[in-house]
Length: 159
Image (cartoon, rainbow, N blue to C red; front, side):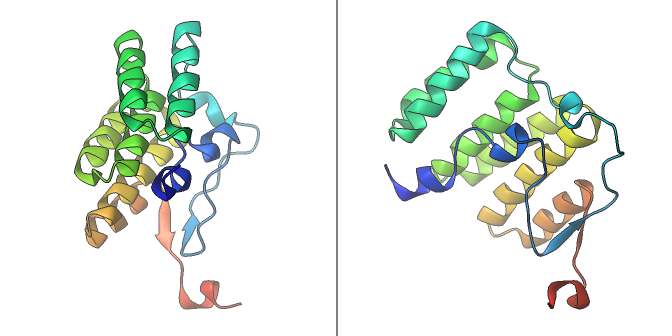
């Protein structure tokens, strides 16, 4: 399996584990409201066919078959075109394929379909990741701010 594929799993583990990514350079602001379900904002692949397709795409990605994963995700998007989660998966795949400009476009589509704080955060963080990969540090910082992250102060980053 190519290292880039291993470093960029197709399914975002942060979303599966219902938490935001741990990043020492940024702090979340504001925190989630206690008692609010974290995943209500991000539509999941709920249709059985979509679940099967996402599972297959993940396996194809692990096997290094990025073209197969792409075709499989395209079928899933045909079934649920408004599913922000699928667009995030597509963006992650594009990053693994070293196509950050397309990854950014797919992440922006996820922003369009995301609902609630958690979904928007995940989508904007993917936009930031894609912009970072393109060397657009200012655009990435803007996306992180839209995700509710603020740069950590020097006092927060020192131990």
